[in-house]
Length: 364
Image 1 (cartoon, rainbow, N blue to C red):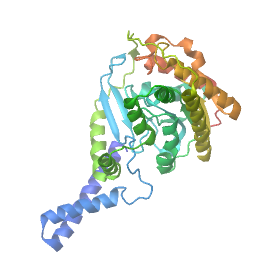
Image 2: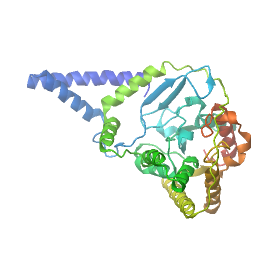
Image 3: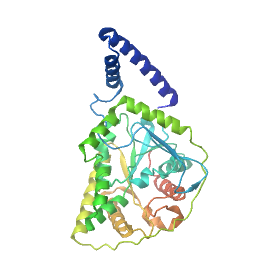
């Protein structure tokens, strides 16, 4: 929603509110009742309470704009993180414009990277070099594994009108490696984090009720948009960055092919198969992308195993696959800020490689 559209919506809402209040007050002669009932009718009129396919209690952030000074990479500009009313990132004006959707965890969501420095946005720019002027939507969700990506289709994407992308880029691996590690070595904190991201909901009833209100309330939506517009005014459009080195190191965990590991791999392949079916049911084409990690990260060996199974799955099912992990040598320590998440310098390399690999696949 543009600032002009937002202001017109506000004026229209205020006008309707005063008309409703006046009518109700005329019949009740009670200001308090007039106020409460007017708010109630405004919510029914503009909210999504009565819509069959509303967003219910899913945790996908919507109508968010945040501006801050980057701390994960050197920069002379403020950074902005935005999600629209559907929970998507990108610079498209209309849902129907979207031809490619990127799906992944925090390495796709990139909540601490500026809008125009994420690999999803940079991929859109790289594809222009191949005369492909297309719009890409970023549907990354922090902490999500392939289970969450699968739930996205049923609980999120199916609720977006006119959402008809041609391709889904599935940037999978790291969080599935974390699931493998969880099964290999129990971690309650990790399990709680993964549950919320993958099932797109909260465990506590009160949290679910609060999220349901936020997802369907018109007044809450207007307040969030207004805050977002105010934040956007602080945004500096200059985009020059300089990566810097973080000396923090860890050590990869050695993984044995025991019964738990084999079961985790089997479950991962089943999820991939179901995910591909979900994409095709959406009348779109899947493209799998293997992931990268800093060589000293604890999950490095887990991800190596997941990437191997992903490429084997692609060969067996004849699915397009981009083996980014095989290009790990093009990345330096400076391209990561924590050995998992890439800085803008790393994103540029990811975007350039993917664009070079898929421009012949895309039929747009």
